[in-house]
Image (tube, rainbow, N blue to C red):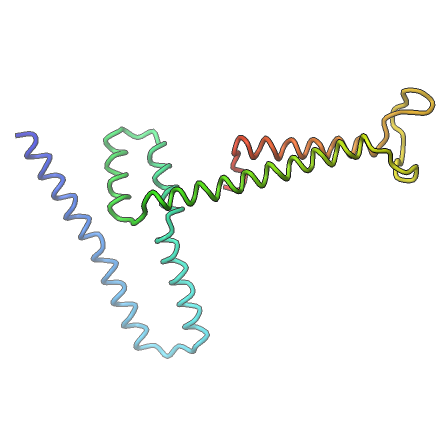
Amino acid sequence: MPNKTKLTEEITQFESLEDNNKPLLDKLEEFIALLDKSDLDSENIKEIKGRLNKSLDQKIDGKALIKEVREVSLSGLDKMDQLDKLELLLNNSHFNSSDAKKLNIKLGISRAIKGFIGLLFVTLGFAMIIMPAPPYFEMFTIFYFNPNDGVTLMDLISLIIVAVGIYIMINAILNLKTDE
């Protein structure tokens, strides 16, 4: 008997999923009727078309959906609630594993480029320290080891460049998300 009630609940959930799109379709019909009645110029039509296309592209794009799926799976909800929300997300959206692979490839390429840039910074910084610079480029000596040698301002600038390079590399390796 409990299986029958569970099956009945699932059937009502699927019926409610179908009913969820009805208000959207009604609003779309209203929007089309308003467009037919209005006297918009070509500039306004292009702007509306652009906004509508952008919104539809975001809905089709798997990036936002994958982010939602990750958020639901990492949330502190009860496992059954998580499964219900994931079921709703997957039933209402169209994406597959190739979308997730494309996103992972893009993220991997981005991380590799950041790591390479960090490596270039580190190499540049150490090259600036090791290679001799002309006297007018050495600027000030901050700390003297002996009367002819010491740590110059150029060496400190080079160390800052090395530190920035190391930060970029660590950020790329650990995949810290500063932009999201």
